[in-house]
Length: 67
Image (cartoon, rainbow, N blue to C red):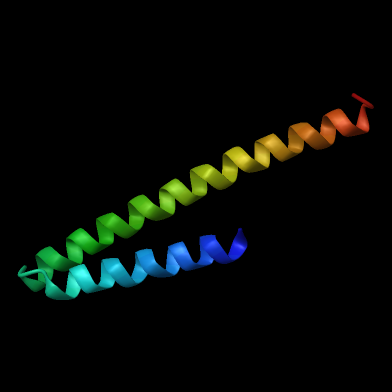
């Protein structure tokens, strides 16, 4: 499963790079779009990590209480 996720992320990054390199946009527009895209991806990752952290903390709390 981990290899699949790593391959998927690698493909996503390479595909995004190919699109960015072949898109006919001006430099500032391209930079702005890439920055926005990257910020969105990072925010989604942070949100997913926070949700997972909360879930795991809940599981640990339930485990220590013997539930």
